[in-house]
Image 1: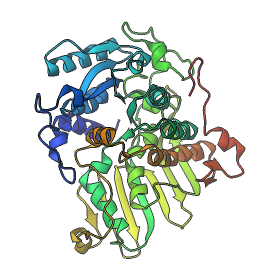
Image 2: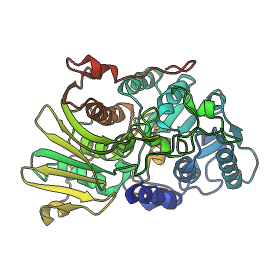
Image 3: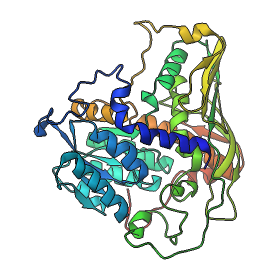
Image 4: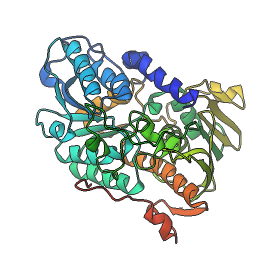
Length: 432
């Protein structure tokens, strides 16, 4: 894994305990929200079950929710006993009791009537099935990004709307000052008319992964880990983070990191409710081992209005180029740069576009929306459009040709082979 990916995740882990208080504007965050013991009556707390409590599930999601006094963790679930015990002990230590329930089957969590919402932090192939199941039992959902396929994402959007659930795709970028500021300046015309958006994402992985089958470790429910994915033997380089490099479970860096910076591209380009109409990509795919996602790539997309989106592997970066200048940054959360100082210093007036955010982060935004029943800042439909960019990019690279895309119908134009790749069969008994 490249340094960039490690740095971002280490950064999240180190800052999760202070994320709620670190960036308080424009959300007004009271002391009760920041977790003062006893400041919120139990009857007013949102009860949460945590499904998937690995590194990020604990370090970012569980710890951040525990920092909000109006959130009450009551259950944790994981297929790995070691993760389960660690998360349970953290919750019990926080509340000074032994009340946190533990489960290995997520269905036991969503079946509980006393749980209001769930936080899902599993591999990508489980995101949509678990989210839909939770919604059908009356739970609001925050779920790690992205989807596994375009078709799954569309079903999720329809399900959340049908059941009236609050749903948040769990990414922090819309709460990050640099990206919010950049996109507001672009949306308010500070660089003129946008003609090109450039996104760089990390490359990798940088080893092929060992495909040798091994006995399943004690304490791991591997069948449940596989779930709807096709059966494959357990290997040491598969679970706990590295599933990202296997197409059966994820879409590589393009889907993982793309869920962050491709959303920024959509946000600033004012295309978050639609998508490109053409895609052409070339990639170098992992071969000779366990991993099979693209490790290097260059993909060019075109929107109906002629704007180009160019995605390459390199250093995490986002840049908008317009008729009157450019703005961007190089490095995740790096300081903004622009073609002129006047762009960076420009003030957004009260009657201009102010993009929806919550600087206290996606978990705080989710809790607020569970109460208000308003859309979160990264709701199902906007996530669907973002993740679709990654999915059709991967399909173009796999097929090795330019594809035309209809963002309204969410289908490729006159290409049945490509359209068959928009969905996947699910292993019995799992289904959407």
